[in-house]
Amino acid sequence: MIDWQSFTPISAFGGGMVIGLATALLLLVAGRIAGISGIVGGLIGLRKGDFAWRAAFVGGLLLAPWLWRWLGELPPVHIETGHALLALAGLVVGIGTRYGSGCTSGHGVCGLSRLSPRSMVATVLFMSMGMAVVYFIRHSLG
Amino acid sequence: MLIILVALFSGLVFGLGLILSGMTDPAKVLSFLDVTGSWDPSLMFVMLGAISIGFFAFRIAKQRGRTLLSTPIPLPGSRTIDLRLILGSLLFGVGWGLSGICPGPGLVLAASGEVGGVIFVVAMLLGMFIFDWLEKRRQAELNLHHRQQENIEKK
Image (cartoon, rainbow over all chains, first blue to last red; front, side, top):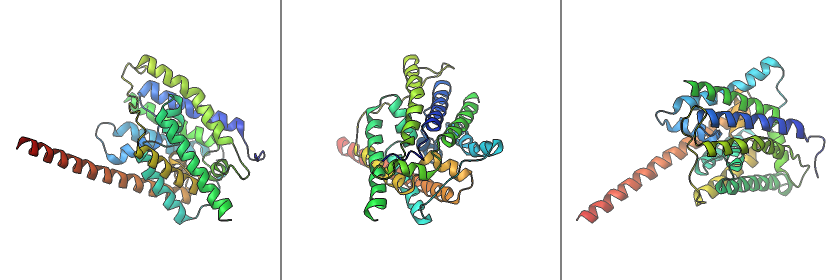
């Protein structure tokens, strides 16, 4: 059943378009792909030569909530997961996105935009697995 | 220098888009993943919105092959669907389903001072570090193996 109370198609599509614009800008001016896990992963690998633009992109991302807060109020956030589980989740997201060469942005937005078969497979897999995990936690464990 | 400024601005706009889209609220993402419960399809609209622009951007990139500054655009060339892609994506899905957080929103949450976001990001960075360490070991072993093969062939 669709939860019409929570469903926000307009801000979702609009926010998506803004994400698309940021992606287009980075691609067409800087020649880089806006995949967050890849950009952050490259910072950890400390590959010489392309450290600066990665750090700048992440810096911009981190500035976003501050700019938003300066102009108004950040939308409310609900984190229901406990700290231990959050740590586990972060760990497997870190390992998984690096082995899988991408996350929601790299595969889900950029990869699907360029109709990459690898990204289609990756997106279907992480979405299905995410849905399976939520089903297990919410409806199977009770 | 220009690339660095563009990257900074792009990151900022990307983050603002994430906040506007509602995807920085893990509860909203979990609601999308909860297809059999009270389902919130918003995340699908975020992806459609992003792809509606990204599709044309990548088409232009492919046709031109160069950026507006005439520098080359290196696009991922791999087309093989291997075990690394499959298992990695499944593992990412596990973490995403547990928390409702993926790397982009995680960074925004951490920067806005959410304790849960900070925990997630620190663990994610550790995970990426572990990947790097394992990859370097694997590469070293491959090189060693390669050299041994060469030595055998020389003899």
